[in-house]
Amino acid sequence: MTVSVGKKVPDFSAEATGGPFRLKGVDGTLVLYFYPKDNTPGCTTETAAFGAAHPEFRAAGAAVFGISRDSLRSHEGFKSKLDIPFELISDPDEAVCALFDVMKMKNMYGKQVRGVERSTFVIGADRTLLREWRGVKVPGHVDEVLQFVRSL
Image (cartoon, rainbow, N blue to C red):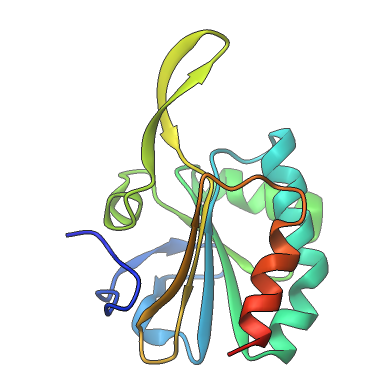
């Protein structure tokens, strides 16, 4: 089963910086963004942008979580390096990636590789998927997500 806009997102859990994450444990709106890899240029830019806008997301009643296949150890270093004010979820077995259908074949240096398609999901307090962005381009994306969250 994969998620779709207008439908309830099934409860899931995963390891995260700061302790275990469980969807059912999040109060209010959740912004969940999937990114390919810690410490890479696009992912660093995107994560830093979500970090800079974090107070505005909180003011709008939304929690932000980033998620990738990286280990908790990698996430801890990435979070510390960028001074990120929110938690990062580790999904090495791709269970959450599968639920959100973000694993895709991509071209990297002329080779086909399987990886995470940069995607963002906004989940309402009632656990309904309200909006999704797939194949995200980093510039301006965080502002677009924040504008949507503020409109709720």
